[in-house]
Length: 298
Image 1: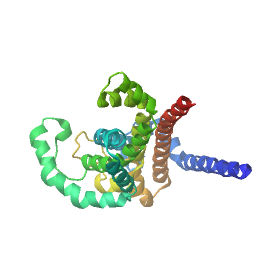
Image 2 (image 1 turned 180 degrees about the vertical axis):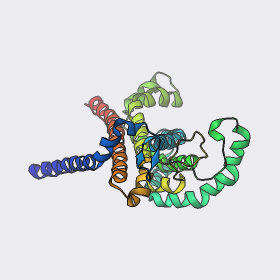
Image 3 (image 1 turned 135 degrees about the horizontal axis):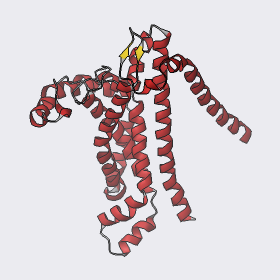
């Protein structure tokens, strides 16, 4: 049995290595042509066969940061409520609802974004932001509806359940003795949560946020439907943009030359490395809390 399990685990590792090697091999034409300049070139012109990854890296990072800006307070706040405050009759159905929302296909979020969110932003939100905060470059430009702001909101909605679920498990993993010790010293319920629970599970909460970031970085369909799909670097959140995942989904079947295809594969390789690094770090941080709990119990 152990031999079969080791073989299964080894086959998974070999599969991942084979994927990386194949992607690197297919990306070689772009690597040889553009070298490291591919990482800081902002041009994307398939006709002239001039390619650079900056618009897609920028769009991926900006949309993900916008998502975290909204999702982190909501997700961790909901996790604190579920783990520390909510009564049992409230905790169970809300936890079930969170897990249910996390399982909704991304294309459903994308359709909602196209038919509900984008018109709402174009008609009401973006004009209001332009009038009140238009002196800031972030809120200048015509209200397209689709764009970075729409992508960030969609990603936030998709990421909140993940951050909430993982953060809740982290908080529940904090030993009861931490809470009892704080209460014995005269701390209030909120002081106990803030000083004992949150501080003890801090690394795990950071890991939960990073898991949400990894989810946002790799999201494809929903973002593709609402981001506008324009390869440019724009400061305004109203402007259309592109992410690494969405450009691959949109243009992979349209690649008419080997260099064009290689450039898209190189973007995919960059996205693969980035998401593996973020998710790997997140898992280590979450596991560190579980390991500390086991040591404390022993």
